[in-house]
Length: 353
Image 1 (cartoon, rainbow, N blue to C red):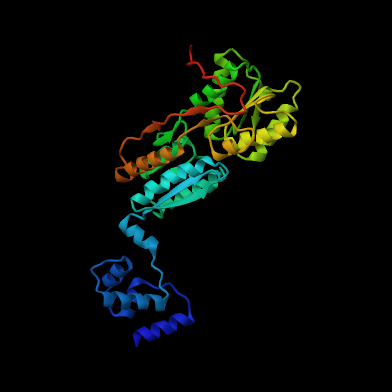
Image 2: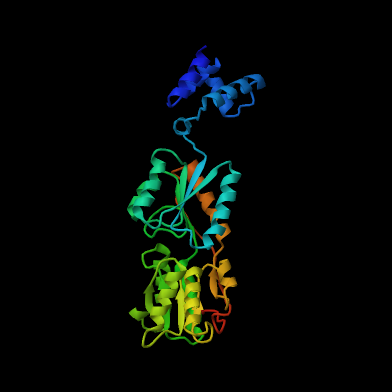
């Protein structure tokens, strides 16, 4: 009687059922319903089928947040990306997903559009225990805010670290990688080298430092008109290239901080009837598929995305197991890849020689 009455009442009005009400409807204990929902093999098959029938009839949805609060584990990891425009992120995500799933966890991915308020709204998932940890691809938070967060919750950085923050991170030496690329252009004979970059992004700042260090190392001036800001898109790279080529004294080489941006540079050069690798050299960053697909093919910097994703996951789980474990930064190697957009492959000399 109680079961039939409850079904009829549910069809008349919408309300949030509790697991206790499901147990009453099925005439079993709350513990039995919980075991069924959690696939406990100790539950008899007949009982399991009966409980699942009641759950289906009542259209019951377990309150996963409440359950997560009790067990202090959601088995979910959040990955925060600034955008999905960078192809390099896909190889990093593959490393993360395989490592996380091997531990029986799920991966959620969201983009912040480099907006600190959007980012903060996702960080709050940690506060209400909707997730167990976050892997940041970058962050718009202050180093002090990240330090406070890392003391209370498992977080780590992948691809770039937040300068001044003490959180664990996996990255390449972005300064050195950019230095090596620009040095190779200088040693190939270029003296007028432009930078197309995202000045507000953490990796953009670091790669910009490497660019400036290389110029200083070889006694070349930093020309403000050669520092062209852009966002992470193809079109923005093309527009920055257009501005550079419109200068009265345009550069003979362009270093872009991502392959997507560099591809935009290459396209604009071709539209201006300038041949990349002959009239203007172009160097990208990431060695994504687009660097091999465009014509002419793009010289670039390779960083091991898959490995970075796996290592970042390892660091995150270390923090999940022991939040007091020391934070660490792992630097992985980079490699210059020379293709058709640079006229001469030159290995950069060691800094300081």
